[in-house]
Picture 1 (cartoon, helix red, strand yellow):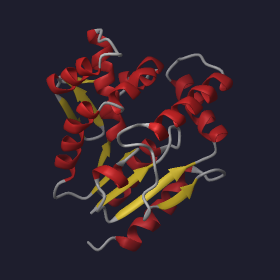
Picture 2 (cartoon, rainbow, N blue to C red):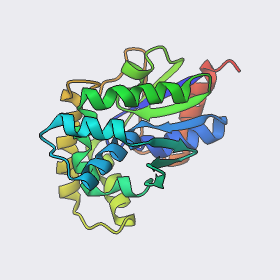
Picture 3 (cartoon, rainbow, N blue to C red):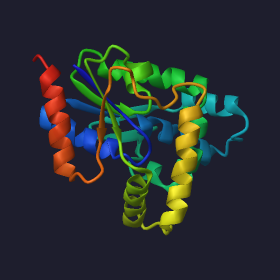
Picture 4 (tube, rainbow, N blue to C red):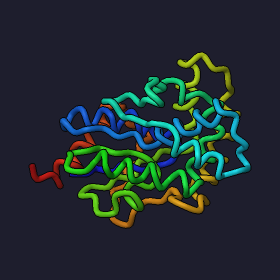
Length: 217
């Protein structure tokens, strides 16, 4: 069974999808981490972000592996390194590039083939797995999402203000919605879950209930 969880930045998709996968005994796939890893590789190699072909070559040259809940870039665990603000600022160049998306989508589908998977991202239910048995669109108010992102940055030791995080998030929301390939959108058959005012456990409970109503082991 494939469960897709899509939604905007700061909706808590990764953490919630990971927790849901653990409860269900499913594999977990963080597709956003793949694009972040390619962006990190681009930063390290000094690519010209205005030359899409450069990053496409990087995407085809690097080796990405998903090992449990960790992501490896050419054998290096970059699970934490890809979450910095510097990587976030350039990830759109990977996500907006069709020649980067093609190999990553193939990798995502190969990962999920023949498995029970919870996968999260921006286009999992619309582009990557349009026939998924259960699709969820997870969201929250812009202010709530910005507060969560600010807390994550503080835990990573990065300094930022709420206003800066909110402005960056709103810019990213526009970019994600206007992306030429794989834009952020709820699949017509997705169940929308708004998490404002809900505790973490309440959200996971809600998601688990949605999945179990559709799961036929």
